[in-house]
Length: 312
Image (cartoon, rainbow, N blue to C red; front, side, top):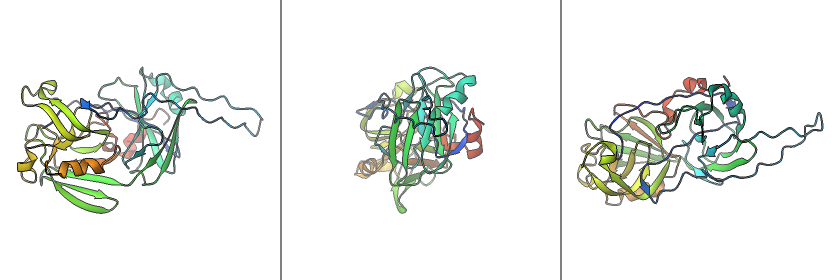
């Protein structure tokens, strides 16, 4: 069962400037979750630390203004998975001519090679979202500080590594947690309603989500609550408990595009172990998820990711 739209729109406007110890990112809203966590830290703000005096002149540099209407997708003190991008969104589109100036106000301190990139979010206009991701997945235990101008600061930590790979051809999911591997039977999208291919990052999760097929163009196919829902894309892809998985997991793909897990405790176990920022990669399917459909940033190769920065 799934809450994803039938139509497959591609949205991809990306870019970035390679930097060490600096970074930043954009945000994705999540579907119709009941009881889901709100986008972490979307409206919270914290005062930046004072800027030290310039030792050469004795003067204090003017602090960078915070871009108007800027929101960050990570809460202060949060622990995230190794795939989490830092995502900043704006209340209004940033004109192309102003994007370089905006990027200079967005700084992340971390021991990592990373880059900014402007992303065309599925639900926003061009110029309303800019993301940061490392060249490769974050190293567990990395401490990160993000500053958006002078008045918005976040400190967060990268937790243990969890990378799940869903193979729609074998109907199995391999879950690797800090090098330890276990496999889980799954059922994915039926032919014609294929699960997105590519890498998706967990944006949030909810004990139950109301899904209605009418909202995504599938008529009266389904309407009701589905449990232990791990949110993967803005268009409505979830990895969740599905009664059909009791029969078909490990054997056949029968959903409307989501990844279904059995209700014998399998779905709850996976739900309990994942956190926002964990990685779910689908292989063997068809169309690749767009960068702006949730956190699809990792589907862009490194050179293209860097090329979208206004500072290159």
